[in-house]
Structure formats: C-alpha cells, structure tokens
Image (cartoon, rainbow, N blue to C red):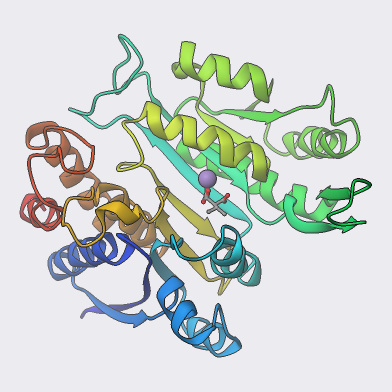
Length: 354
Ligand code: IPM
Ligand code: MN
C-alpha cells in the first residue's frame, strides 16, 4: 500500500523555481523508496505574475492552497518590485493567513561544510532556533503622521499576546523534550529594555516551564546571544526567540553553518489540519537566475523537514543522511557557482545517495 502526500509547490521568483524543483526531485526519489506517492501541484505565485497581472496573493490562491497541508516554497522577491510588496504581500501573508506561528530553523554544520568559526566542528554546531512567526514588529501595526513633512512621525508597534507567547513557548518546550539532546531551552529576548512586551514573554516562559521540569529553562539577552553564538555555539541546544530577533540571529546562524545555500526553515502551524510551509532561508538571488549554479541543499533540507512534519520520519532521515554524504564527500563549496556541480547535479547526487 502506498501513501499519497499532496504537496503545493510555489517556485516563486529568481532561483526559487530551480531549487524547488530539486527539492521536489528528491521528494519523488525518496517517495519511491518509501512507498509514498508525491502528488505535487505547482502554483504560479510571485513577482512575475504580479508584474503581469497585478495579483499578489488572491483569495483564490488561498482557497486552493487550503486544499494542502504541505507547501514547498522556493523564494519570493523580485528586483523590479519595490521592497516589501511581495515579502509582505506573499511570504508574510501566507505565514499569517495560515497561522504558521512556529518558524523552525535548524542550525547544523554538515560534514565537509566550512564554517567561518575557527576550530568548530559538526559536534559544536547543532542547535535549533524556534522563531515566533506571527507577532512582534511583524504584526504590521503602525502608521505615519505628517508624512513627507519635517514634522513626520512614524510608529511601528510590536505586538505580543499571552496566547501567542503561550502557544509558541509550549511548542518550544515540547520540541526541546522530543529532541532529547541536552534538554536545554534558551529564551532569547531583551527583558532589560523591552520591559512590557518581553516581560509578558518572560512571565509566560516561567509559567510554561513549570510543566516541563525535565527541560532546563535558560535565558539570554539577544546581544549576548550573538556573542555566545560566535564564541561558543555548543552552548545552545534549542533557542526560542521573537519574530524580529529570530529573523536577525538566524541569518547569522545561517552563515555559521555554511551559508544561505544550506539553511532551511519551516513555517509550521502545529494545530490539527494546520497548513505548513517549508523553504530555504536564502532569497531569490536574481543574479544567478537560470544559470543552474545555485545551491539546492537548503531546499532539499526543507523538503526533508516537510516529510518529517507530514509524519514520514524515516524518509526524512534518509534525505538528511544523503545530504550529509553529498556535502561530506562530493561538494567543494556551498557557494553558488563553486560547488563543483550544477544545481541539478546536486539534486541528482542526493537522489543517488538515497
Ligand atoms: C526570512 C526573511 C523574511 C522575514 C523577509 C523576506 C520578509 O528575511 O524568512 O527570514 O523577515 O521573515
Ligand atoms: Mn530573514
């Protein structure tokens, strides 16, 4: 008997479609070995459609995507569209509309991958960032007064709710327990300055921690976290942090693990029937578009996260193992154009290693 896994694929902009198609290639290959039929549907959403038709993310898109529980996303961002329009209109809109309140970003140094950190090995660099994905400064609350005058005032408000904090932190404790590595959850915030919002987060963290006596509840200010992450990344097991801080520290963490070509993430709605979306952390890299040189490893890892989230742990483990064989024994570098192979060849190699 074979299972059917329905996947919505949004290639998106720039190199997005190229990496998404390698992710999908690997899904099909591992599906064959594990008796999972991958039923993929492609969606034309992104900058090109916007420039042609003016459509960003329509209600019809939402209705159609709602037929899926798993979305594989390439990249959103087009050089001919002003910054913010597509990011807010598509990427953030999807995260918000599907209430994907967890942004899960594993930080793992794969074998053979170079880190800018001297003397650090795959053993030292293996932690996970759980970024809250629906609140904070990303809520889009604010406005202008006296715009374009010398008296202009702009307000951009960070929103934190008890419910939003609780569901994200409880999921983080659960995740830390299940990961079962060092059972340490570090909350990263700025309680010494953000004395309202981060006080709510801190109190919620203390309350939820009581339900998880087996997990160490640790805390770092975000500035200190940046320092420790570079100096002693082995300090971290799981980090829970706010949307904006999570955005910033995961770019830094991404470069520590070998760059944006390797860093993957999941936008997860953990509720029953929730729709989750998996993506490489890097952008659309317009200058490499169509050249078959971009690194698809991040997207292939995102595809593995998709499998794991859909309940196919064994298939996910197989993909991760193949990725590590390819980085460890084949690839020369994780940078676009320097891998020693093309984008499609890397996808083929991962399939072969399965
Ligand atoms: C990310 C990206 C997005 C974010 C942008 C493109 C809106 O940087 O996924 O980290 O800030 O969340
Ligand atoms: Mn980011």
